[in-house]
Length: 206
Image (cartoon, one colour):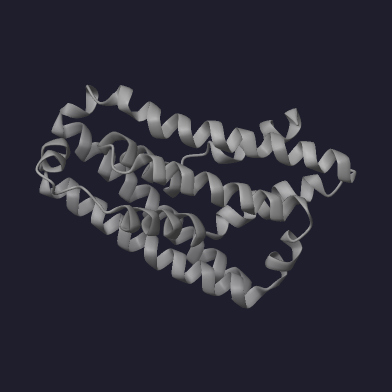
């Protein structure tokens, strides 16, 4: 269980599209419960699939992998463009939210969260392939404990950064901080988008 928690935490704590999105929604207090719950449920399901041996099936389907990578790259590129637009606009996010301009419906928030989670092949690589591959060396009884540890780490991380973001609110009352965050988010989204295009090309050409 401890091994599963450490491996899951090590993979999930890397700064990526999903974590940047959760942090931003936490700062805006925008349906944050549904955001972190969606991230956690997806993570738990994918970890379970990987631990119990279905990771190889997804990893072996090159056409599905290429399609997912391309769609994910386009989505992340678009999301990064939106983030850069917010940074250039320079309006106060907290004031805009108070006026109703930054509030999304629960359904729209869940859809955005699902897109950022499920359209990124790196998520499958981390949760299904890597975690599943490590768990493949364990006996069935140990796999259950390994999975529980990995899922627990996911729960602590997502709810921690989602609800812990509010402690950063004094810092984010300065509009310049929001602009810096949005530029960072844009760079993260675009860098992952480029890596996905390279990933798709390597599969397609390889």
